Image 1: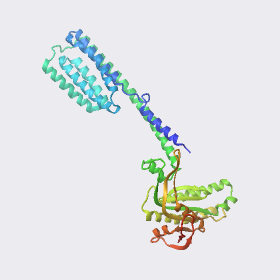
Image 2: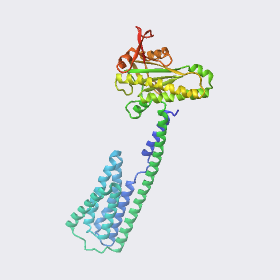
Image 3: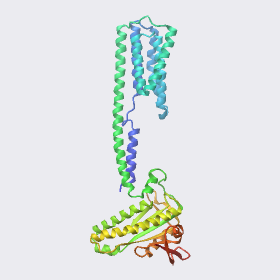
Image 4: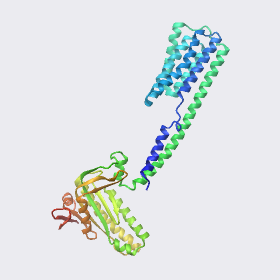
Length: 418
């Protein structure tokens, strides 16, 4: 049986894929910003050399060195969840600054278009078309404002040096940024593939583990309705016990392998009947089956008891079909099922230790159902008075008198399901 630690290991590996920088390297925001400011600084320097811009603009070089490091320092101290939104706000602020710079330098065509191209490329990568639209509006507003204040430059023919630097800087920026984006996409695809593979492994493991628990219990744990911890509660349930009359004699006649196959076939088909009626299969012990109704899901005490007794009747009918099948296989010993059912308050929940639990029930009603099963004749279904009172309007029963049961102060009335 796969251990609980195997499940945790798969979950930890999936989390590591999402949390590990090596598994999914983030887009290098600082390097991209540094590259962008370096490209704009190169354009400004070339423009000053070509007498296109005033030498007073060289102070932008100092700003270009300080700006990326300042934002990196701030970003490292932000909450991880807030970083994507702050990153978008900073990009919009940079679009505004670039727009003001383009307008202040007189809307020189090639450098202006180069800066706009870099900013639009960054907006599309970080925020998609919506960010691209906002960035375009801010660049246009900033450029228009500064051009209105300082006018348009008379140098509409961009000098060769400035043109070359602008085109080369923009090309380098776009190529490097596209390369990092491609690398990130590849890493994300590889991580997605690995997560999908481990999710499939987890599903397979979950399916294997589910066979060790009743489907209702597994479902309540898997959906989070019930915590996996040591806890119990008092609840009114209907308890069912059954065993096979003649199984001991059969075990003396058959080889262990053939006997195991017969027993597993019996358990499999009876389990299908139990699940069809909504029963919670507690355990298999030898040739005995213990089932209860009313937890973890319940349709009400009367409906739970009615479902349990209806299940027992269906099992008795199904046993006739199985006897015919076994007879055709050469099994001469007539196998009969006998059943006992009791309703009442029991303690239900997780029993055991923190590292090994068993979801089961304990109480007097469990002992009573087991005692009724032991007293039943082959093919007989015995129920307690409490169960009889809940089903008597729908199912015919015959009074079988009273029995004395350990743990009960008075004799207990029992009934046979007709």
